[in-house]
Length: 356
Ligand code: PHE
Image (cartoon, rainbow, N blue to C red; front, side, top):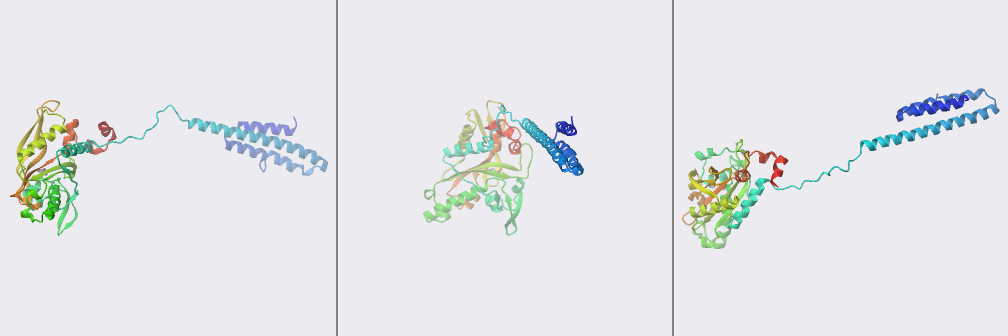
């Protein structure tokens, strides 16, 4: 083996030993680089005769080409190996089930609100929506709860900035302000048509007010059965001849439809609200099932106070009716047997998905 063949063989061996592109480039430098073996041989030719240069130069060139060919071959092999390794590392397991986009669904409390709207809708009730940031007037004063009235302390109120003449706005503590807001709109519409002032408006001029107002309400309160944000649904029925008897009938009918059971009993327990007189707490009792025998409070209610009827723009001598305010969160807990209200508002998809 002459010197050139030996260099070529050494170079080939060095290339095969290189297992990364960086190692290969280092090995290349040893043979083809500026001070590599081949370059050194070229430089060493200066002492030769022209004839010698010709044959020696051709031989060196052949060796160089052989080394370059080996280099290219090794480069391609390494690149191929790298590609294979990458493909292996990034391999897709096509047998894994695909990740699907969730179907989504209604929140359990929304399901309850829809049920409430459907059931009361079937009894001829409209559905009204109102603001969650409310004025002191609608939340308290118009509902026969003037400033300094002790009943205000029944509500732990969140006050917010804004408001008029030093009276702050607040986050509504109940949906009862909707009694006033809705009734005032209703009365205005028909008073104009009848050409009557508040005192002269008769029910013949105006359809009865029959409305529910579901929505979010807020109080400074937080434990397993109270959340600072919770839901209420107000009910209001005002007419010429609407009595407590109607309230009892309507609410009993609602509960039986809501719980899909005739096997429950209602109790109207005397209570106090500034905006109703007389007032009653409504309790229900299941006769069967896990809750059987326990009295469960589901709503406040009562005959609308004459001062409130007046604030609706109606003559309390001519118009009478009832109102109730119930807790859809509570109804949802009872319907599904959930014992911690906070679960509804944590947003845990594992909990919420169970209701779809
Ligand atoms: N607004 C009352 C509450 O939040 C409930 C209620 C509504 C009572 C309507 C009577 C009439 O406690």
